[in-house]
Length: 634
Image 1 (cartoon, rainbow, N blue to C red):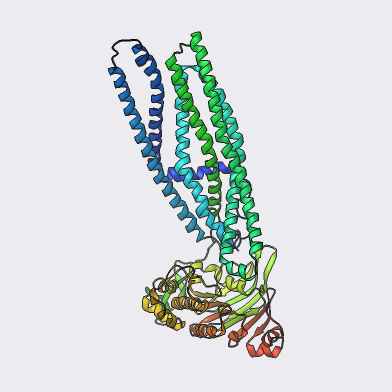
Image 2 (image 1 turned 180 degrees about the vertical axis):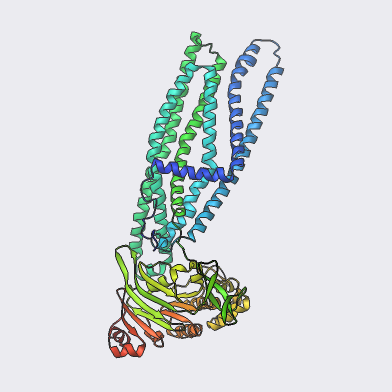
């Protein structure tokens, strides 16, 4: 049983400090693991750029005290030393410009590669998590992981992280430079910085919680929009536009409130920091002037000018730190949601039995290297060898109980068998448990109690990929993918040749309409095959199963959404496909299952009647009522 089925999705609670630290460490690991060398070059360039900036500020003192003041009042001033010093300053600034360009370019490469790795990790992991995850998460919300949440990471990695590092290095370097000029004025700066730090901590902590709520609200809104786009026809048919607008307004208002609260605090921080910086500038000028007039500490006019420039440079990175913290907090909120997907437990597969190509040799079944049309189950015998069992399609349920959510049982003591080549049908009202039975056969879910046996092997002992490779499924809702008609048919078996795909289309009665398409089998399909009718899409799904050539088939109401004439064509294609195979059929139209070997009538997760068509008619029970119209399926 999948233990994570009922586990609530991660990341639904508050985004606390411990979450930030853990998420930040995981993001840092992407840098240190794969891009450490490049990142060290970035840090070196940032240090070099910081040095050039500080050198320019410190140069002001020498410019005034050493080069300008001695020239004041002279009749023929010699400017050679001043020109040389300015030339050196120009070279230093040029080095700073190159350093800034270099680290920005390298950091852009690092950030994009990390985002590529994260998207790949999310998508590859998404293929391995249980189907149940998508029962509790809307498609739009999942899409938000790949769009909005990764975009916050892009901004943080490409801009906020280098700006943060640059600000920290500048703060340390400038602080040391200010100490060398005047410790008296440095005290004023320290006091003001402490005030700035406390404001940043208070406002950043408050906005961080709302930034996380904002990302969650974006996911909900995207999920709702995705549902409405897919169901636009239904909305219009039932005149549900006004209610849809009201529902969207509710979600949009929630997003507005969370985003407003987050950005009000974040946007207010920068002006506050700027004004505190202006106040600091005035205080330093007053204190510095008083010290110079009083002759305290040997403060000169050049030292005051340099210190004022350094204080302004000191305030700038502190302000940048406060601003980048908001972006970083928002990105960490997005990253926490991304990691909630990456941390979802993968589908458990403890099966050891595999499906192999086989052939008969001297009356025994042996493994074949290439496709033979015959399959066999390869089972370890516990002695270092293997035994082979021919895949026949014998499926049996033994006292199966199942529940999607603990405490809410869906199937009750289900026992049935399908011998090789038999056609087993399930009928009953919606929610009776028909589709659930087929989901258990292919192990989208595992049973709570009981056993499902396939050719004498418990399905839990069969590797899921091999189990599903032996099953062909035709669903009511057809999914076609962007690509040619040929590509969509070949989806059933990727190594199928064009000839095999065409033969499968002929068998499914799809060849006729395909040849009438603009480019035949090379016609491009987009938007889930929106240019095709429902019947044509269904015929392609049957052709897809036909090319896979599975020994067992599951037909889940495959003809319920098409007209009677098209149904006859589709049904003929399915009949050809069902010959010689074990077939499980779910149908609301009882005319399609009259020739079934056994019909299971289900009600509230239980089999209440079973037998072939004639036997059930003679019983004059629920099936008789359904067939004669005395009782309708709901």
